[in-house]
Image 1 (cartoon, rainbow, N blue to C red):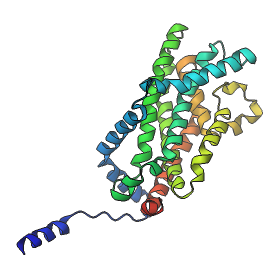
Image 2 (cartoon, rainbow, N blue to C red):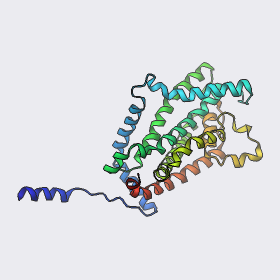
Image 3 (cartoon, one colour):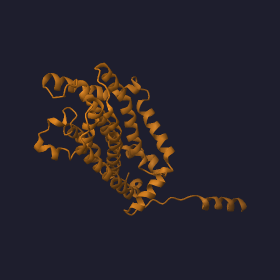
Image 4 (cartoon, rainbow, N blue to C red):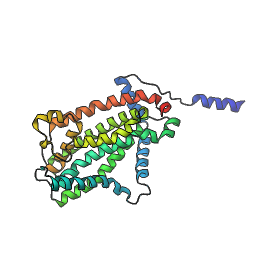
Amino acid sequence: MQAMSDSGGRNESRRVKIIRAPSFSIRTLLANLADLRQYRDLLYTLTLHRLSVRYKQSLLGWAWALLQPLALMAIYTVVFSLVTRVPTHGTPYAVFVYAALLPWTFFATAITNSAGGFLAHTQLITKVYFPREIIPATYVFAALFDLLIAAAVLAGMMAWYRIPLTSHAAFLFPVLAVNMILAMGLSILLAAVQVRFRDVGLAIPLLMQVWLFATPVVYPLSAVPKRFESLYILNPMVGIVENFRRAVIEGASPDLKSFWYSAAVAGVLLPIAFLFFKNREATMADII
């Protein structure tokens, strides 16, 4: 009887987490962020796991992080520097396009992979409680690691072509911060929608292809007609890609108009996406 009583006491003292749809408020947002902080070790562990699993038993290993931007750079260099000319303000086209591909590839990889993250972790989601937004976040951090690896190639290209860094390179850090915030917001938003509507995972690759050519990756922002520029910079990736390239290889002052618009979109999107995600979190395990 004593053993049963002790067992019962232990069961009563176990912490129970009830997942329910929260109210949309700043107070709720801050409370969820505080809860997320307690699971930062899990975020770190799952991100490392994501990286190790991705390249496990592959012949090229970490070199796969370089393959996509290098392959796209080679294709675009042939098409847009040999077949047709694109103005690059004196910068070798290979460096011009590769610099733009770094923030774009990070963004596209993070969103594409994170959208299907919950479907790949069904057993974990249905059996263990943790803040579900950790899963798409790990894909974003893994994509950031790939960007850092690929950036080493850009550094080598700049050294080869004798392209110096200027004081404007300091603007790279706010550009990358906005890039990451935008990727995080879209990742958790699309991951939540993908649980209910599986069409999202099928539509994202097509969306990324269209979005790529609506962003100044293979051409500069100056190539866009002035009468369309105000409409064009409504694409938040315009300010990120253009200013990344300006800061790193062009040594030019940032285009603040496009940058602040990108920052505003990212800053509004992330909290809204986070609250939407937490509202849908309560039913994810049932639907998935």
